[in-house]
Length: 417
Length: 206
Image (cartoon, rainbow over all chains, first blue to last red; front, side, top):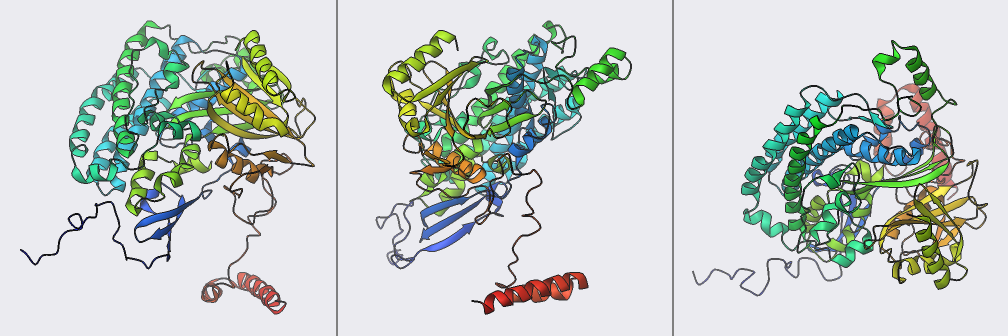
């Protein structure tokens, strides 16, 4: 045994430190990470300058998926643009629909019925579960663990089933309309959603047993990519990333919309602000979402099932079956759909934001009094979160880049828009 | 936000930065302060640090082109909209800095919040507005070498032909050009030859 060389740790290195002498001093290796790397969640690219295994400089290059969504917004009507919002954060398309129409309704100055609000709230929480269940599966996948990915997609499929059943589309939901919804919820909505709400906590328990005590996972997540409270404010971070750093902020509680103030739920916050916190915080958020869903489903039968706040159909679209059979509704439909007719919002500008799974998703709309927005600006959480990456990975090891990138949950379509 | 609170906020900024605020308006309960662009840094700092204000959290920086707006709020063509949020009072405020077309530049606010780094780069990219003092002002969404600014109102939705006139990289990779010549149709071959001739001319001219 005596002639075995001492391990690195015994020789005074910590595991974290690269072995000196891998590269001659001052000589840097440039590594292109992406745009087609399996750990990049789509097309984003990092140019990493390495000294040995240590990242000296990280330069993100984005724009590979830039599709001009903000420009497109100027050429779609307020109801048409909802189909474009689906394509932003495609992990929870419904949350984008909702954020868009929250801003549009503020611009029009209308408020939905209690029933519509409640349906929207339930689906928003299902969308949060859908987004988070994708996240909790893909983060370990990027570190090399395939099983959590396969398990979490079972829960994600159930969320998709709800959306398929309600909207007719699994992925691109486009369910909200100005002042209402595309159509009413189907008869066994209650059973489907409560199935999701009931299954979530035991599924999360299984996942947690699989991941939480895995030494590989812990060593790659603990104390990696620590974000301080000052950095949260400096970079404008929101959502689970801010909360993992101990910032007690959630728009659902702080600036309630859709009637969130009536529900009892906790807002988990982290203590360290590392990748580990950002990962496991989402588990607790999913449990809280399931809690909100159970309460909301109890409330739903108490509301009068009235979707439309606007009985004259001056702003909201009349239901299709009435358009085809009633004269008045036909006229209103025509007025609302054809250009240069009624149904335009007043001149003005609004900003409205929702707490989506990834953080504060806001829309800034400028109206010139026509049916087409004059300017649409998205406040995309992924874009704002991604700019912190160089600060987190410079000076760290190459393998930490994957861990930090995965827990920032960057969705490329929202990043580039 | 109520009107008296808006007046209070504007009054406090006017006290801190005497010539900073040009105008303000309230629409749908949202306060928009129109600030002079040369003093934008001071106005935003007053909003962040001033007593009774405390708009500590940067939400977004957005560009606007008012070229075709029928009722623009001011005479300048562009504007930068800064959205701020106060964690203490849960109020939001929007500060607009009008930017004229002939001198399209604004002081960068990256010194106040790092959030402005990428958002200002995006405005530089899509609107062509220059940010003075920005540490790393490069295009971010469009590629290097792109000439136009797509979110300007005089840029057409279908583009200016950038898609069809994309630069070929044949001179860097002669083997690739050769293999394409072997695979492509006669029409494309002719096209390739003309491109090749142009490249040869360019090389001959140095």
